[in-house]
Amino acid sequence: MKYNNQSPIAVVDSGLGGITVLRKLYKLMPNEDYIYFGDSANAPYGIKTKEEIKNLTVKACESLMERGAKAVVIACNTATSAAAAYLREKYPDFIFIGLEPALKPAALSGEYPRVLVLATPLTLKEEKFDNLMARFEGKAEFIKLPAPELVKFIESGNLDSEEEIAYLEEILAPYAGKVDAVVLGCTHFPFARKSILKILGENVLVFEGSKGAAKYCKLCLEEKGLLNYEDREGVISFENSDGNKIEASKRMFYYKG
Ligand code: DGL
Image (cartoon, rainbow, N blue to C red; front, side, top):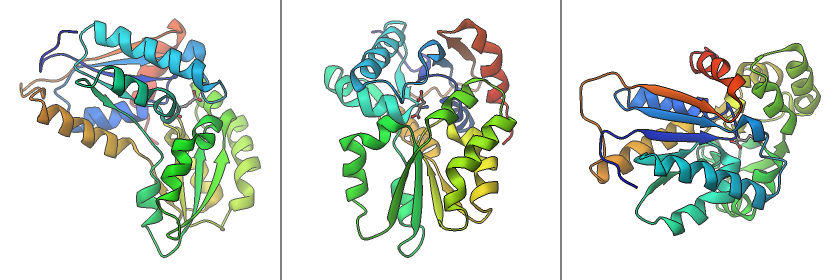
């Protein structure tokens, strides 16, 4: 593993969802280079076993580290749950940035708010999530809602399709007008933000972890002297285990939603 402050930042996800994190990273650090790797050939991760997800995530991260990435952003709540602790223990000096559902700002957004947490089945059933939820006991009411099908709709690259909206209506209608906030605990879900709000109510507060992860990534790079201070425009390389997803990746990077 050889890297310096001009090396790229790697961003990995099960597919196209991590692009929502890449967008925040690029906005904050536009002079850095990025390699975005989406594992769409194996998506969705959220319905696989923890062991399967861990193996896929470790393989993707190690290959990017061997190619000289100076940090890896695991831009996937599910992959973070399954593999981040293992990777941090195996490579204690390397920067791994993980994503986790943004329960804290949601819990603190009001007086005992009702918070709907949308994520993958794996994220919601992990002990890591229960421990996170326990930290805010008495501060908010959390309602867990797995939305595995939503990942597939977003992976298709056909955003806001009729089928996607019908699925969202089916799972979200029981909560319409009944929650104060929603946590998008899967990096694919911000691509459906508009449709989610249309159903839940436009005044529902939305929380996601991507901005915080981008800020934390910058801080870690700064601390290790690995920020790129050159005055330049960074280059993003889109890679995917399914070669047909490269065009959709680029389009979704510029999606306004
Ligand atoms: N983007 C991922 C996350 O943040 C999961 C999607 C999947 O199930 O593959 O949890």
